Length: 279
Image 1: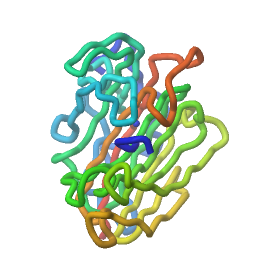
Image 2 (image 1 turned 90 degrees about the horizontal axis):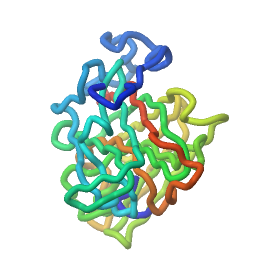
Image 3 (image 1 turned 120 degrees about the vertical axis):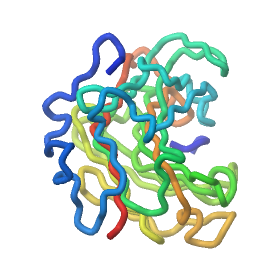
């Protein structure tokens, strides 16, 4: 989810995890989280009854993310909550007024800035995604200190993005180069039979010095090892601390606006987020 054009004390009916929300194992156990060659260093299994403030920050704004998005991001329990072993981020069609004005949609955007920042690692999440024209869920990473300059000179790693009018396709992208508008990007997409809204799927990036790999449902789907930064020599900008983000945007330059076919509310349901370092 680029910054520019180039993601249950709660609502009335909390979304339960359901039988498929974690079929691997009890997430209180480390067994299902073990990975050869990787050491688990950070995780949120969403087993409590509230979003953990030691792990996540809420961004509250209505400025549109630099992409002309239409939502107001709030920290209200109506837009994000934890219950039944999952995190839910819910986009709603409603009139909401805050310091940045009035918007016709609300949603939530969470990040781990200064609570989870890493240079290199494996970053994974198991999620069920929303769908519909104008929806834009994302699992992604931004630099924590912007040492090479403003977006996108300091980089951006998009582990997973989906535009809701293409519910069976997810995208993995790097943003880099110079500061906007001298930025550039590279990436690829993968399409499944059906929709990513129908069931939970697993998304991951493995970021090592000079190489970043993307996985969907444990299958390697692309590898990138070439990028640039106007602010420093290769492997800049992907050699500094980044943090995680989860959000559902509404509208914007890429997905376009919702239309008469779009139904609300829409939810991104997150079973877990895990971070590993190479052994």
